[in-house]
Length: 126
Image (spheres, rainbow, N blue to C red):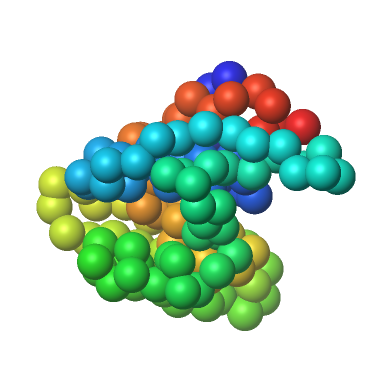
């Protein structure tokens, strides 16, 4: 199913980040596994990265892609109270917001590589 990049979260966002990592030369398989409790997780070459919540995994991407993070304290980006991530290196200039800095940064990364909409497996959207 196609999803707006600005609405990606959780496993669906991690899936989109994995697709981007494959584009930049990571040579891994990409699959979906189901935990014992029924939770769907992204299997990236036998690892289960959670870029949308883990600084150790997302940090290298933020640094490599030169993504800037800013916080607006009173609501959304336009109203304050959200994180804004910006990537200004051409040709893939992008800007996305999120409730956390990692969600904003990973949405920004996905937008810079895959655009405003991303194909995500339906099972990650439930």
